[in-house]
Figure (cartoon, rainbow, N blue to C red):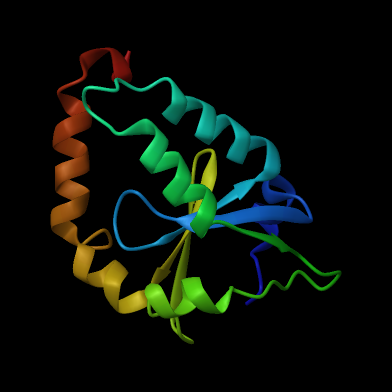
Length: 132
């Protein structure tokens, strides 16, 4: 796949693909952000999350990837199969990471719908300081 230009700089030429923890997607982290992500998990409440298990799962499922001089990368076969990634994909910048979705999964999640837009507006309007 071709990594969009605006995401290449954030990911750098070497990055990590891992299972997404929110939605059926693949996360794409820069090497530095991957370390930060795992560090945040290490500091979660152990009453809520089995930290060693989660770290083991994510580390064993993550894949180091690279972007070639033409901006292309290969989606590892194991992740491609698990998340049913084919020709129709959606790549979303999500702050400290990018997310890679099967297009039909993205549409099923409803993120591109009018209802999703209204939900976002309602949540943000409830946070009065956001608009100040």
